Length: 220
Image 1 (cartoon, rainbow, N blue to C red):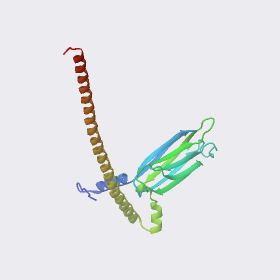
Image 2 (cartoon, helix red, strand yellow):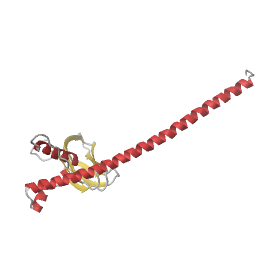
Image 3 (cartoon, one colour):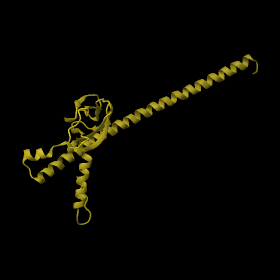
Image 4 (cartoon, one colour):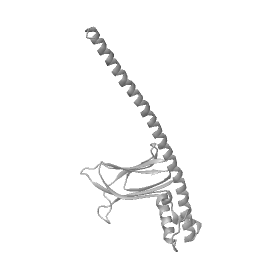
């Protein structure tokens, strides 16, 4: 890690560097949304292979402190971009999932609200973490019996490793996009040549047809 020092006190820049490392190495998506009975809402997250991901979801009670009505239920499914299922909860009010992503790509979490008449509006809290943010650091500290400084160093080490893997992942994505651009450009070139050939052929046939017509009419 390159550390830039300016002036006599580099600490703010060091803290800024650590903050940027954490922000770019992991993803944390915590949101609250509403969904009506009989409707579906899906949320996607781009996850690279071998990354840990953890999610928690629950329906918020419309009356604080009161139990949820039985009609407030939904079905939850987590799938990869290849259609593989990683989590399924049928007619639940709360739940969680955790898994290591085998495939890289967009993972989709879909919520299907149970159909009900009259229509109910469900408020859902959903917390989705990936990468370093998904790691349970409190358990790491308890199991390893490490102090605060060691724990911060472990976090930093995992963060740097995650950034390193993310760079390779983005490089692979960039190479795939470049290959796609080259393939598209090549196809467009041959399509343009084919279109030009067709236009010239049609123009030639029209000229030949007109010439034959005029010769038959003895106009030329």
